[in-house]
Length: 139
Image 1 (cartoon, rainbow, N blue to C red):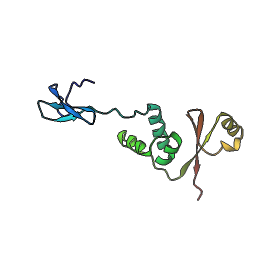
Image 2: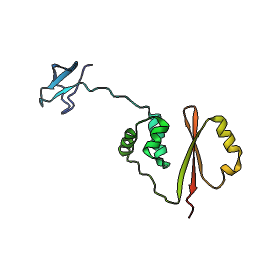
Image 3: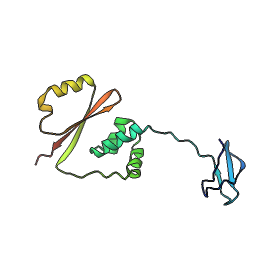
Image 4: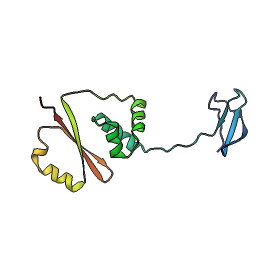
């Protein structure tokens, strides 16, 4: 991998400066900054980022989202901070969620008592579906 710019000052005047831990080290001639090649981290698909943020906005906790999507709760917290997501606070409702396959979801919707009196959202999770239902807190 050939580097073109110094990460510190964006100068193009960089030279090789040895190898550390089997990684090439570079030095900038302008600012004298030493650096190694950036390691490529694991990239998580944008689909999971969007789903995680949607579920966060629906009221699920970081750990619940982690269990559902299989993505670290720390990553989810970082995405919430990165995109400056603010969850609306409404104490009159709370979400409950269940995960169904296609047949179970069809049976759920056949019973009218399951869908009356509350908002329902269905979202795809691979080969399954997540149903989120809002219910009023009873006083």
